[in-house]
Amino acid sequence: MNPFIQLGIRHDIVNAISELGFENPTPIQEQSIPVLLTGSNDFVGLAQTGTGKTAAFGLPLLELLDFDENYPQALVLCPTRELCLQITSDIKNYAKNMNNVHVVAVYGGASISDQLRQIKRGVQIVVATPGRMLDIINRKAIDFSQVKFVVLDEADEMLNMGFQEDIDSILSTTPDEKKTWLFSATMPAEVRRIAKKYMEDPYELTMGTKNTGNANIDHEYYVVRARDKYAAFKRIVDFNPEIFGIVFCRTKIETQEIAEALIKDGYNADSLHGDLSQQQRDKVMKRYRERSLQLLIATDVAARGIDVNDVTHVINYSLPDEIENYTHRSGRTARAGKTGVSIAIINSKELGKIRQIERVIGKKFVKAEIPSGFDVCEKQLFALVHKVHNVQVNEQQIEQYIPRIMDEFADLSKEEVIKRFASLEFNRFLDYYKNAPDLNATFEERAGREGASGDRFNRTGMRSEFTRLFINLGSVDDFNRGDLLGYVCNNTHISGRTVGKIDVKGVYSFFEVANDDVNKVVDGFKNIEFHGRPVRIEIAGEGVSENRGGARREGGYKKREGGSFRGGERREGGYKGNNSGGGFRDFSGKRREDRPERRRRY
Ligand code: AMP
Image: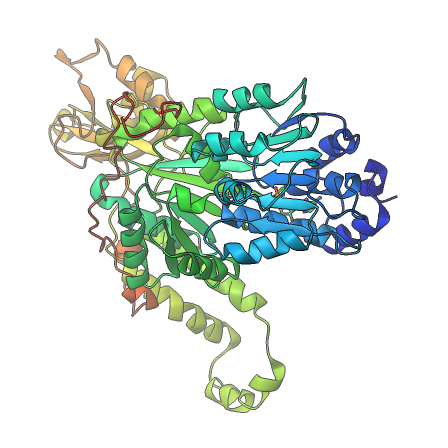
């Protein structure tokens, strides 16, 4: 039996949602539908966006309302126009096979007369943003006296946006005996207060731990110098050829600047922020939804309620002012059971903020390394190979050219042809990236913030790097590389396998050890003497002038030559935005005067 039928949903609705691809209920649907179907409970559901909340309350509403009557019986309040339209269209889709179901979307920035007309014609479910709803109530154009259910969707977002008073006024026009269903991704004290104020002994459902992020999201951070931020960001994008991402900035100006720089550099990007007209916003969102855009650069406010599936990456180009906003941002990926990555590009001063976010989301970030130019080339090459392998061949169209193409390649073997096709792209990438610098903040730049043995992880989460150490012994002391390796291992009891490159100079040498072993080596050489001279070990870069910053990948792209690259248009580090520092300029541990007190700051 269809699991939705088992939950108590009728056949004509189940048929409609089957067409939408709903085969099994999501966890929140499984747990909330039976409770809500009783129609006798207030309800608080703590769940992230993208978990299937809309059907969790939408399906029970369709079961519980009387569609032979044409007056408002359910009111769904949500924070944004986008979400309002989404919920309306979702409910209409679920109700596709039912008769006389009238759902109206009420939101600002669109003609009020159309909405009034629809209300007048008769409606059972009103989905609304608070501002416009109140406007319509004040015009006495709607009667909520027979409302049975009120849904507060994304309650935390609504409060964040300052809708508390509007919600109060709206709810005061609904009957006391109605049931209230509240959904929220986070549960700050204000949402608790709302729940207490409007609900009686609500049934509470928490999907996952309170305030935690979606378990399907991996969180990564990259530490870069402020001046390298844009270049580093592009590197990350280039390293993810299939990226379909939302990039968050703190201000409208930054959003606009980053989008413009990206477009200039040949990326498929556009911006979404509050200075755009509604039409412009709709246009951008349409392009993004249709995937004509690969990167959407947005402010927090503009991106609220964005419900686009299959977002692969959320990139925090700048961390949000309020920690809670990080949850909202990252919740734009990993929707409907998918996985996603939320990336923060930070400078070393912002590590404290990462730790605070970790505490709020209850999940650790992985420190990732900005990929080298060569890593990017390799990744792009295989993405291309994969694409070539899977491309849909239009037999009819291509057929007429095949003989000439075959002719052209007649003197080449299959291997040669493949090599040439692949080189066409690979050379271009190599050319573009051949002088690409390491964009990771050096060990020295991070030190002091993270301690000397801060692990460095590559993208797969594996320990990937070594730390370069200085020792005051060299060839004048009759050491060659083998001698030095033996000397280090004997004194420190580390395995030779964890020692990397050894560089023996005259009176000193450098050698690399795995980050995990740095302390062992430093401790192991404490009080050790060599022919009466104390042996000195230092982390290269800390008072040592040569080759700071730990191991670098040798060889690779630097040694290779390439041709031209389509990304030749893509300039590295070209952007000089006013805000490239990306810091929290107003952060001081104090609250800014112009913000509501309740927001949680770092
Ligand atoms: P929501 O949290 O309601 O915004 O839902 C997120 C996405 O998951 C939407 O695109 C829904 O269409 C989809 N979805 C919701 N429930 C299911 C389900 N049971 N099976 C498959 N997809 C679902």
